[in-house]
Image 1 (cartoon, helix red, strand yellow):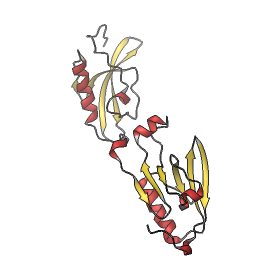
Image 2 (cartoon, one colour; image 1 turned 30 degrees about the vertical axis):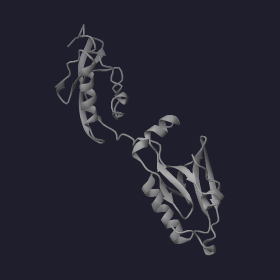
Image 3 (tube, rainbow, N blue to C red; image 1 turned 90 degrees about the vertical axis):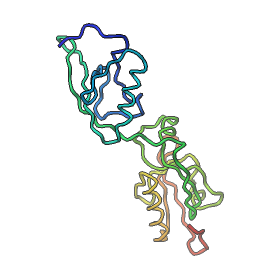
Image 4 (cartoon, rainbow, N blue to C red; image 1 turned 60 degrees about the vertical axis):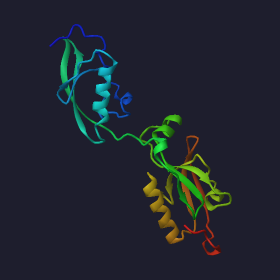
Length: 205
């Protein structure tokens, strides 16, 4: 099957990262999308492009979608069907709140899309971001600063907020003699350690 001409706006470059922030696991760059899940796309203006956006927006992370595309081959354009799994969209900055860890005196946030974009970091980066450190708190005494990304605590990875808070509880309950934070700062990996004075009246969690 050969396609020699297309209506204005029909040749949609499939950079799906631009649509709803979701990127398919299999790349479609350079292809022309003509159907999504069997539904033909009749594109003649910007409003029709919005239809494609909505189709992608409605796809939850992990959802498989079938894209029928025109792909140029030796004999011209041919229709090809591609299965793509939509990835989860990272959370936006305005959607998350700070969480306080009182014992060590720091506040953290999950890594958001906005933060990763601003810092030019990969969207699949993990860890938690330090937003505030209490003066003379144990985190500050270790050398932790606002803006640091904590990747692990006492040799255990903390890829997200839940794992970080869980690990901190484990450390506090065990009264670890030395607590080391693995942080990323300015593109460098650092280990920042402190010896908490557990018997000297630690703060409440």
